[in-house]
Length: 253
Image (cartoon, one colour):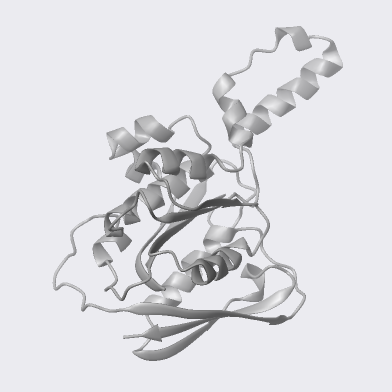
């Protein structure tokens, strides 16, 4: 599979508010889901048939939101004082507990009728998603993830998102999608192709950091700097699944 577009953004507030239609669509969601969907919209133009692409969404490694957490704390406080009946609930905050919210929203927005899978919020699920993309051999696929914080997922009032668009047929990487659709400054980038050949595993227990989007973002940064030819990216232990050492094998042209 060829990586044909990717986008990684941290603290997506400006990106969301610059797109009024997207903001209206996602503003009631938790920040992690907003970030994932903003990244997915950035790579959407690189898909030839987005309605038929395989969609694989990674749930946040730390679920919920600052609003949902505040609501839970209010429940505990009012339960102790016997004033629980006074609690007022914002119904939209119940959405913040839905693991596959990003997948559902994106599928509806694309009118998608292809393969869809929502993976749970365990660390290392991103690499399982790429393995599945290689195994299934769909013509196109989109993998998206959103987490709280940049590399500190327990900070519920910040978020980051990442999306990778992949295609079966050889295709050049879209640099405009990497920039979120913004025009390039200066000379355009040379056309490059990034073919994902394999995802390899070997036993190596460790303690991973709970953020799927962070690992995909680091892998993307390394890939974009790779010279032409075979390129192996060894996933840092902190971005693996706690069980395996994972290596992504690429052919760069």
